[in-house]
Amino acid sequence: MGQSVAKMTKQITQADVKPVTVPDFLIAKSQGRKLTVATAYDFPSAKIMDEAGLDCILVGDSLGMVVQGKPDPLSVTLKQMIYHAEMVARATTRSLVVVDLPFMTYQESAQQALRNSGKVLKKTGAHAVKLEGGRRMSETIKAITNADIPVMGHVGLTPQSVRRIGGFKMQRNENEILQDALAVEEAGAFAIVLECIPPDIAQKISNALKIPTIGIGAGPNCDGQVLVGHDLLGLTTGFHPRFSKKYADIADIIRSAIASYCTEVRTGKFPGPEHTFK
Image (cartoon, rainbow, N blue to C red; front, side):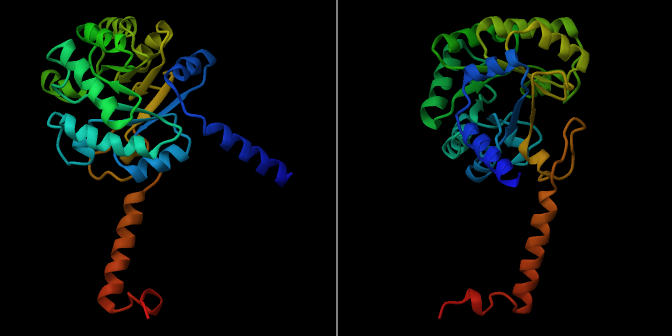
């Protein structure tokens, strides 16, 4: 029995090495298979997530808050996104890698968005870009997808609009969000993030769209879920979003390890003979 289980696990592991592609997202929705997405910003984190079987790694402009310690993502630059995305893409063999276009790198014109999207894919080796906005961004999405660059959309709470909407708030206008989502699908996006909207609205949108919906703070009835990697690993301190779940407390493990290191250095226990060259 044990050998049978081990053999099955090995077969599953080998099958899961097959890279996840953009068409796989559409297939997953048609089969009712939930998609798993999380953010990563560096090589070792992305490698671990990839090996764990994550369907998609998002290099989010959330790095402004999570990595840089800023209050919002507005100051993140395209150069910074490319720097982080290249590390993530180089670490992965299975996960689809999607990169956020940061604030004011696509809003000016469809031509600006197309140029920067192409730059991201050419310089990083990532598979797709993500941008925020619904109907007002439909022509931009269409221009990018017409150039064979896959686009993931994002409606509901759009963090780059935080100044306009007055903070990170739940979005409740069902008709507005639905029309935005339909416009993103019509423009050619292969998937769409639904952020901070009531679960009943998210379910209606998921039922209305042919492309998969990826929820964050949008309830359980989306076609997949996305979380910030640092949040689910317990690496963030201070504010913790209600919609996020901590699956580990890595911060405490790191804190304890560093404290032990400090103690051993100060007491002369480290380095010991086994750590010293002869």
